[in-house]
Length: 195
Image (cartoon, rainbow, N blue to C red; front, side, top):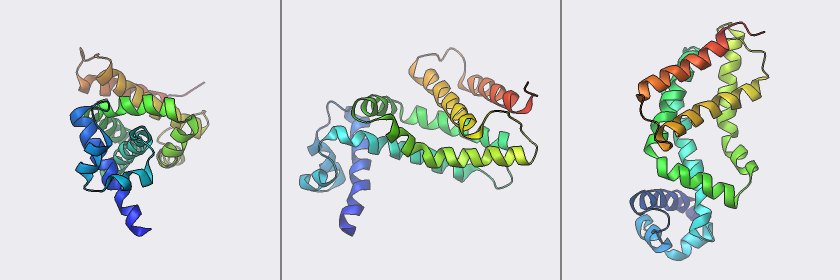
């Protein structure tokens, strides 16, 4: 069983490489297993088809994002500094994995439910929520919105803005300016008195 657990990351990594090179439609299971250095039968221990790779890829991208954020956050960072890192890393990952993110959205929408998204995002939501709570407890931010809802709103806003910028060909404004405006909006909503 330990051997099987070691092959899954190889397969997912190989699929990411091949999908980025050839696209989803032009990549075969044979391409993936050749890249991974595993037997074709090993692939089918984990996935019934290449379509079933989509949630694993989505989870890998999200994990990469979350780990990158955590690596860049200083223990003494303010909530706004943390959110700046979240914005920077979200934009960087969205740019790096743009075609795969589009694939993940279409694949998860077709093959999986909303609950799968929630399951993947749970650790990320929890961590951001803890950062917001810390900011509220320390008096650096304020909000009358329930924390779990606020967390999801902020993450959705950041991701949606990054995706609109990179996927929607809305690059008439610099990425720096878009991120500044986004952070201004978020920080204003967390520091201004709310009625």
